[in-house]
Image (cartoon, rainbow, N blue to C red; front, side, top):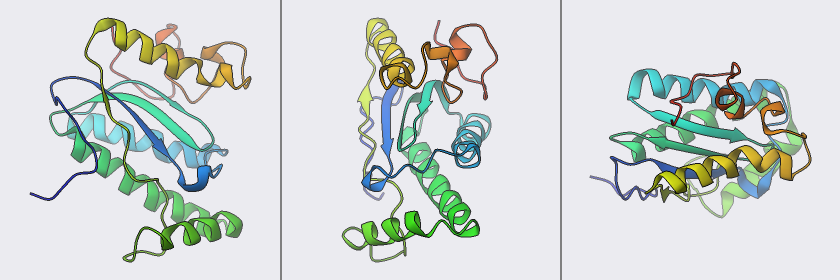
Length: 177
């Protein structure tokens, strides 16, 4: 079995994860690129048994809390799929300034591809208690508020805060009770 950069300490428990775009580039500023992320999570929920408890997508990184028997594989699939699709989108729309930065960022890390989209790893943290789950969900949902993008967490479109506020979110989640 190959090595994994995603250290999942207990597959039976949820983990708090962070994925960051190389050089903190603002790639998720358009609905089309965020939709790639949302579609990937929806697919993994439906086909790979991913339980997605909460998420937020900001312009250059995202946080989510998830669980799966093979969470390391789900995270790997997520990052691979989203990277390829976002790069394809940027190429199709000729966003050369971002592509050039992703091309340059790759040189220090990978020799088998033209671009490096995500930073290495996912900073997985085991969520080992109810209190920690609540703390992580609050942190995720408060992120856009702390950045003063919105006044209330549920106003941020690209977050599960709406799901927890009893409103319709952009994707289904596995709500933590």
